[in-house]
Image (cartoon, rainbow, N blue to C red; front, side, top):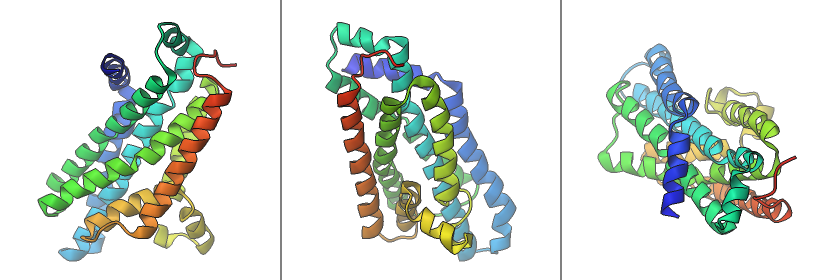
Length: 248
């Protein structure tokens, strides 16, 4: 498993699009929006609240994209025959799943860490050290929901459809989940939509921790529920559509 894990990490880690859209872009957004709009929040505590909230949103945005991008590749691996080759070796299906879950989880860390560092040293977010650690840890654990979602989409769709689906999902989850603009300025109907998305509750976990409180029970339960549903559906799809079958 360790050899397969290392190989998969190298494959995705060499992808320049992954580095651009899940690490560099959220970091640049953090700097741009906090520097441009942070001044309107004033100084002191109000600025800290604004900067920390937007930083958390961008940490969530990058981690969400990384989790989806890493795990949705299973559709491309099926189409290329790579999964069939693993089956011939043979590599158990459970090991393939386990490696994809671990890869998806590990590849969320660069975005979480880089945006946190940008928040601290460029935009001036001030949090106690233990709160920084808790913030990264909570968002890392919460990213499993999007690892499960990426696996579900990658298993259910062929490679062409999966490629389009990840772009659509990323935009919908970020825009309607309140990662780009605060949910509070949404019309009432859109606020209800936001509260029904995993991205909203994922970012809310981080916001709770950044504010100095523990994650709310509502956020934890909502994200755990989404994770369980996505994982169960992924298992169901996998049973009906074997990993080693060629898509199409």
